[in-house]
Length: 212
Image 1 (cartoon, rainbow, N blue to C red):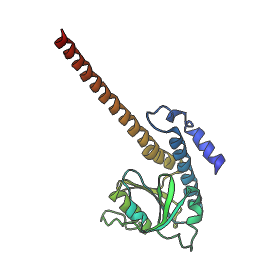
Image 2 (image 1 turned 90 degrees about the horizontal axis):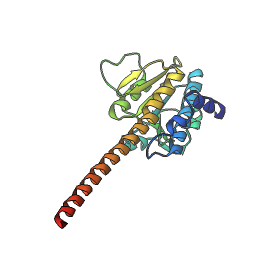
Image 3 (image 1 turned 60 degrees about the vertical axis):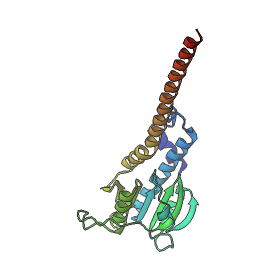
Image 4 (image 1 turned 180 degrees about the horizontal axis):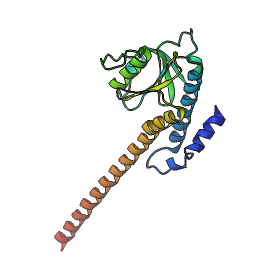
């Protein structure tokens, strides 16, 4: 995967544009991006072979109860293609990625039961939509019938997603989101520090007046 990951990083401007954030480890950003590309490459390898797959990426809301239903792994996303080999013990169910690692495979997900979900959608799609409604996780679904890739987010299914679009969706919802949160936290700290300094200065002025 390494040459493809390197090319993908270059296409999105490398890691330089992610180095200007506050209070966030650059290595974490770089590692997250690399793992995102590993996922994308694996997804489209599975799609090309029409191998059905369901991959859930945990974000802020932890889904430990879902992870507990599967087989624990703690491995690199690079193993996704091997996990979804048909007729193997880990093929059925979902893979959950947490903190850039495959936390578990063969996990059971809640199925969406909304009446407005298209009847032609299979179990994987319903499960992907279901987990995206009950948490802020992203679900990537590969159809074994068509080889098409879909993404479920906030209870909505984005169908027939191309490779470049999947990269952008994952970068936007994982890396960019973390950067924005880090920046917001830093700005909040700065504001609190300014308020603290203001009151310190005010108290000092009062003390000086009393002393006179």
